[in-house]
Length: 95
Image 1 (cartoon, helix red, strand yellow):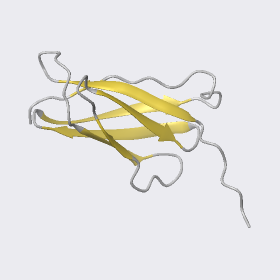
Image 2 (cartoon, helix red, strand yellow; image 1 turned 180 degrees about the vertical axis):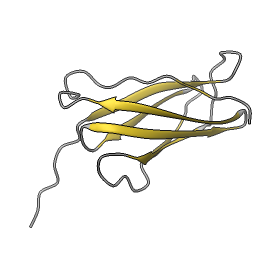
Image 3 (cartoon, helix red, strand yellow; image 1 turned 90 degrees about the vertical axis):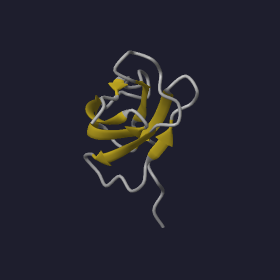
Image 4 (spheres, helix red, strand yellow; image 1 turned 90 degrees about the horizontal axis):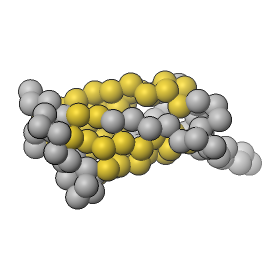
């Protein structure tokens, strides 16, 4: 039997439109990382904020989709992320 390892940290951010307003209801998902990231996603709240659990330290690719467009971002989660969660700000741009 294997015991799952603890997550490396949390990626937090705010999705904003081109004018800087928060985007509610945008879907933010991890699409790549140092380990497989099957269906790790969140929907932004009314304030545009989200949080995703990073299963391991390393660089992750995020994709955001909302009414205002689609955007991608890359964020690095350090090995000591549990003490200082990774933070990322993602802005949606019209496509």
